[in-house]
Length: 119
Image 1 (cartoon, rainbow, N blue to C red):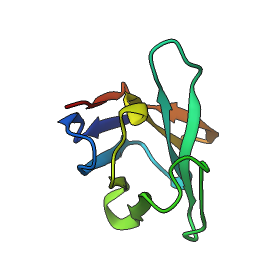
Image 2: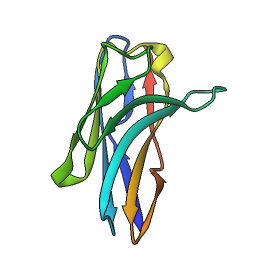
Image 3: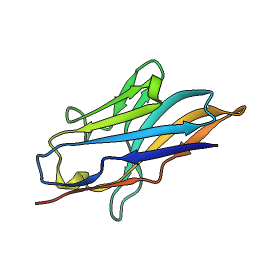
Image 4: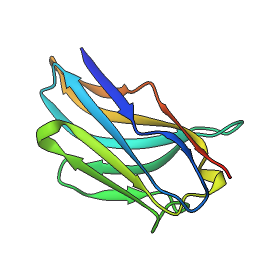
């Protein structure tokens, strides 16, 4: 089994910063990629940022220049540094890992962490 646990969400004022973390644990053979998605009120889930095992990244246009994704392979952890936050960034942020475990490669999801940007 594989578990992904997010942390770091909360309430922040517009223009502020937050850092999200997602730690993967369990019977992990390899992590091919990890990403952050978000789902705002009444909105569909959307990709925020993605990072591969070799460090290649891509971002949603709406967060480019403000958010940075990084990973610590030794800790099986991915981070999302979010700066200059806007009210429209308010959402549940979910971590996704494309992971090989016990002979199976697939997507594993965390439970999500709430980010609220409001004055």
